[in-house]
Image (cartoon, rainbow, N blue to C red; front, side, top):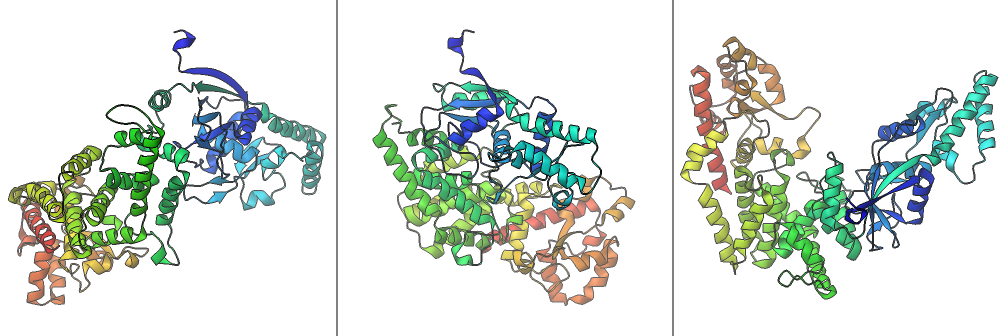
Length: 585
């Protein structure tokens, strides 16, 4: 292939040259990559490989015609005159820049930290600095000092040798080795890197394809990544608002009323963006929205600044509503209303985000009163969680739902649409055949099992053998070192083993589990069902036992049933409890 057909060119850099380009802002971090670095152990290994002369991989850069398309590496403010951005190699360069230039980096919890890598000159060994290493004079505790502009290498080595001689004898050969090792470490600034630079004429899609083809372990860049990039270019404040909201969702606050922190979801900026776009653009697939935000008229194919500004104003308005604390907390109340009291009961975060889209539509597009909205969204969330509506091809499923909603004009139509979708799926056949079949699994995180637990909360059920409500013990604030509730094998595994039932798929069937307080679970241990059942019967009256058998889906004679027959009967009874729980919303 001729050079004219290539999407890239090959360029060589020394470490000092590429870090200088980063420091000057000529090479920047693109927003399609997150600004998080490796664990410190990875950084240590990187320096060790370079010191020993091993290759550490090539870099992939992208020539950038738009100077504000990126920001500086580390925690500094974004650059406005970047000529190239890093597509692949960001973790390596961020780590090298942080250590060599002694800059703080961002962790995945958005905290800032200096990376301190220690070096043992005599053993030529790198390690992550800790308290013991910092006290050990054999180590240079922070190699960043070597590359500081005011460091005099001769004095640096002299000071090190002086401190070392205070704790051990340093021979002439030791001195020579130490000098050589430190000089070699300093010389890493000349370490060669080979970079493939994608030409500025390449499209975002071509860049994504290049990234995927040369880096099979990397994350495939998708429309949400590129939309976040556009936000950094044209609405940087909006991008940072998403990141801040995401960050605040992860950390408990001293002022809960002013915080989005919750026990259901720690949404990523990408997920929050999807909620804003789903509401504001009524789109599940983001490819169309990406084109709109670039200023493209989908009918004519023409790009314009006016169109781009109009679409970003639309995004601004929808994002403001999506990140509004009253809306966020009002929506999370819907999950509680649905019986899902904490995130451990929820098997799909996408279902949370997409249900939030419907909450925003119901509140602002169709003006549904809060009380009615909470009930309807609670039903929708329970329904979509139970059926996995947004599990397979979620974007397509949401896109289809939102397309149908475009024909809905008022609140009655919105509620009717939700009810139609629910009734079309939750038929008698679903409750009597489909759901019992779905319960025929040993999956630890089955949506059908979580719907059963949610139903126990809705029905004010008590824990097996207990006076405590399931809802009370599923409250996240009750979670201790050992969980308040445990899943108990009604037919203990050891007892089943004696009967020849040994496969995990058989012993860990959903229908063989019941929620029980952990002290009772420990007491029962591996006792046969009929034995522990009799021992616990004196805790409750005859009337109470009727409720217990109903809530926990147990036939009256369950301890005398064959195991397979017990599982079959209990699946049907669990399905009935789930149906009753859903009807309670």
